Picture 1: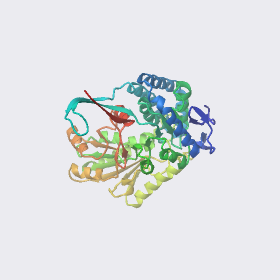
Picture 2: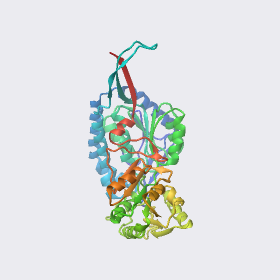
Picture 3: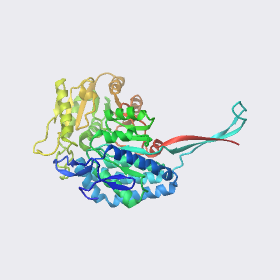
Picture 4: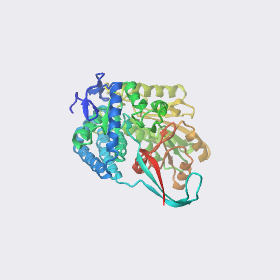
Length: 489
């Protein structure tokens, strides 16, 4: 499928958008990358029905067969890396380093992982239990096993920051456990995801209707997937606002929900922390996809004794981060996804200043970059916990710093005073102390002196950061229902 010929995939057939097409722009310069199909509400419903029709046969396939196809998927993506990397860079604006190391290789890794996952035995045998006779049934020795069965057709709705990696993390475990899927990529950058679906459908050979893909730039065609009874589960990664709407609409038909939503990651820096380690971790907000990542430690809560040292270290670090064309050698910070999102980020910076905070570094648009949607790595200091820049997700290259006095409990209280609870971090020279502090943080994930991930750990948030967990074998659990089978011996 070449640029300009991207189509929807419904029941194994490639079809134009019934409502036309819309432009996809390169965030680095505003040029048109290609045209995505504008699916109609009816096409979304057709895709859901195709997934439902394919579910009966696909859910009965053997784990060996599903594992074989997922392994072929990994090989096929690896073979197409040279085509996928430039496409995903051009439509997301990620740097070449991120595109070459994270955007595509991790897709291969996830398909490989869930090829193995298809062979995992998820059943839980229970010890026999003696039951006396009741009015319900005769007594006996009762045996039981808890099985995990596929949920059904799943709508997989992915975000714009890591479209390929995220969708692979959804459809991999969903297909491994016998579900069918309808893929709905983010409207800003769906082209690489469409190409991925083409590879899976046309080259790998998943049966018709097992993988469907519909794209669109307006809510109705997406909401149709949440409303229809032909979809049994919604797996969504994106903003909290959209997640709340999905929960509301999906609840009407009692859909299974897996929602990975916004974050405002607290980086709790205790008075015995190694500031250099903390600075290196916090600057990942700027260096990793321009802060467009929900797990980023954007909200720094630092003991007063380390405040000046940490702020100085971050100011110095910002000076080493080259902002520019994602394809240029040495670029560390690329553009934001759209002009509208840049305006949103800039409005938060202005709001911080209006509320009394100080922009210690950055805060504007970099010189010499008249095209594209760039914002300088920005550090906002002298913040209070009640400020909007501290409380709301900005999703850009902006770090806010809040000092605290007193013992660890004071910092923990500020960290927990948040609507979000996705990923928090603790920095301390005493790992035991950091662990104890981390256990008191109300977040689904805690990093101790690191922002590195463990891909077999469960992943998900608390509060307004979402519902459910995936990752590793927990991803297999997420796309299955538990079924108890009981018998008399």
